[in-house]
Length: 342
Image (cartoon, rainbow, N blue to C red; front, side, top):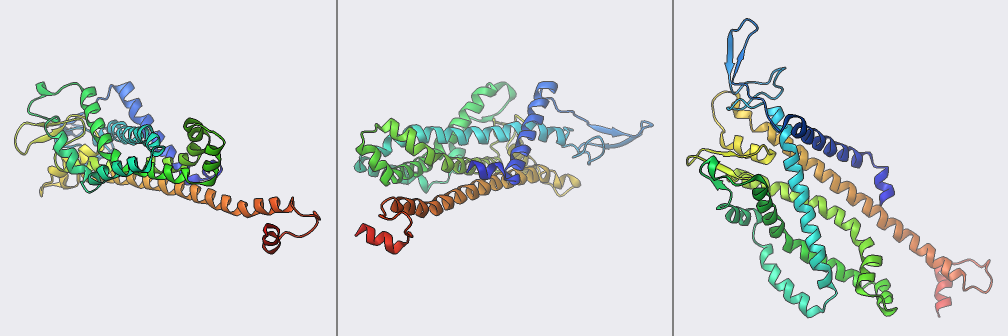
């Protein structure tokens, strides 16, 4: 699988784009302290007043500005680290917890696994977005800037909720996949020879699970991004929502899904501001496309690896049959192998 990915230009192109976005965003935080330029008015060279915010795109402001005069291009650069970082953190946290809980459960008896599956099945019919909204509603809505707690506590709280809500489905999948591997012949041999559960996992199960977990990781990345988009459309932004009045809500940090929901709620039939939300919308759509493309390339590499293993298996069987022939120069065919078995 690694050899296929190393020669895949689409895979490395996606990795390069993700890395570039993260480097630009982190660099903006390090060198500019995360500050975004605000331009309220635009003037001509002779000082003549031209326009006020929201400003249209120009050479100075590539994407224009919002109502508050914030440069939209800088907003997208500053928010990239939050959007990509939170999706990666949630996906990694879900897989890590699923491994720590699911693998030991898979080695337990069938009765215990059936009981756990019965309990977790109820969580699969509930939409994650609505559950997250009702859980986060009371903890991430603030009436004034003085009520807002530290950023680290808000991010940790929302990240933990998103990880736990997506854990049941992933846990059931991982337990099922591990128990399927435990029924294979090579695992039966490993148990017969006295291999401990830790040894079986490290030597046999983990190499088979790793390619699957890479695919699942990117699927969880895209799913987390979609949940953030749904929450922002309800007015619950990542990192908290500042709500001064009933219909006046704003995000506390620059993050792509939050900006999309913020500008969508500001949708107006007046002036070019109608299309402000298209900038984060296009950025999020591109991020989803890159995530799905990475997933498809990982699935392609995994499929080619499985085909290669299936292709080489008859060759190995033929070589094993050749060692049992009286005359080593006799041809090996399925008919001769059948006779040899008889």
